[in-house]
Length: 185
Image 1 (spheres, rainbow, N blue to C red):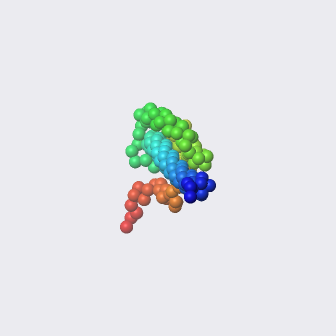
Image 2 (image 1 turned 180 degrees about the vertical axis):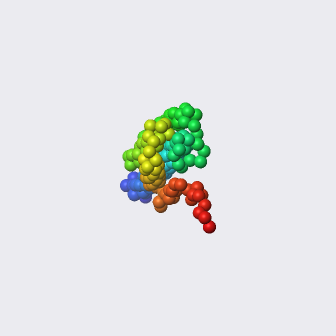
Image 3 (image 1 turned 120 degrees about the vertical axis):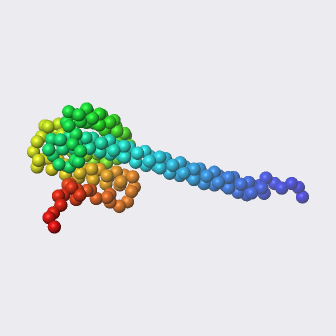
């Protein structure tokens, strides 16, 4: 009886090699999956932050334009802002919006970018009233309605891009119920 032959140990050695390779493969796949999930979460957070910053910048711009428009006699704003005071604010707000826009272009999907563009173009139309370049009340009402619809479309697509299920909350209508004159009782 001599020492065991290498051939006799080969099945055990092959089992160790197969087990090690399987363990390495399983660990590698698990780590790759974990890395992909973490990357997806980082990008989801980045898109959320980008969309929210863009929307906040645009809402600030809208607020200024509506307040300036209120000073020109158009509805939808509580606190009129004299156009000569608001113009510089409007320019600053547009510059901020334009800077935020670049981030949307980098991280947004094509449909959400298109909706964001439609929204800010609708805001620009409202700004024409704020700047005194348009003056008709019916056109103002349509412009504000288009701007609101564009906002809703942006939020719906941004939510879809972020994987948020369910529709966005409904838009408010103008004038707000609390702005209506009290009806005689």
